Amino acid sequence: MTEEPDTAPDDAVIEDISAQPPSPWRRIATFADRTAVLFIGIAVGTVIGGSFFGLRSAPATAPVPVQIVAAPAGPPAVQAGSSECAARFSGGLTRALAAGRPLHIGVFGDSFGAGVTEGLALQFRDDKSWVVHGFSKQATGFTRYAKLDLLDDIRAKLDAQPIDIAVISFGANDTFDIYDDGIAAQYMSPKWQEIVGKRVDAVIQLLRDRGAQVYWVGLPKMREPDFDVKVTEMNAFYAAHMRALGVPYYDTVPVSVDAGGQYSAHLVDPKTGKSELARANDGVHMATGHAYALLTRGLVTRIRDYVALARADVDRQAALRGRQASLR
Image (cartoon, rainbow, N blue to C red; front, top):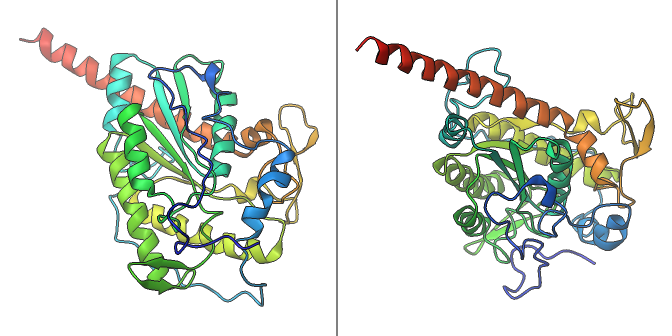
């Protein structure tokens, strides 16, 4: 069964896992709500594996290098030592820190993004200064606007629940050709990159306009070689595009392979030193919420470190204002 591209009928059924939008200030303890979790666990491979395998429209031949079209240059990087490439601390983040309120993280993506939501929620659940919201929907992507316009969908979610940090994870549904305004563009052709790039740019700009710090999560190593070739191209495209936009890109491939750089169904928990089954039987998703947490540990570290820098900057600014006020 082959997944339909953007020529699919507009009334095609898409399961909406965010049918119950998180209410404002929802705590991490509520991450088990069906808005945040979709097809996690071993059963994920059986239930939705077909939709992803269907994306492999043609068998892989010898890999042909794909030319990644450079996006327009983004803002300059922050000072050395920040470990991020955003030009400045986001307005929403600094306002939240100055007000002393919890920081809201919104995760946007497809079914893999739903897993990322659970992984982040597990890591932040014991810290009441963080709230994780799941905004992912199965079978969505930047090539599937005939079924769901991500820009409109994300705008509606932000209207209902403002956030300070956005984590984006799309791609597994986008490894095929795209049709836009009557124009067909082959996967990873310059025209494909232009169309998808513009859609991505609009989403990033929307999130920034709402004051959110944005992170992009790449896809891990895939089990099936032909699909992995396409995902590798996808990751290269998004890594280059995020770099040009000044958006931090989190590479999950190094965390998902064995010592030889090959696909591994198991990951080692650094806390216990024990190996555990980490990949679902579809060879695409992770098997459990804990596996998603292992995959995104580095991302959580980057977020925490960046927020610590922003907090220090907010404290310095407050101290400076205090000194200036005392001199008046």
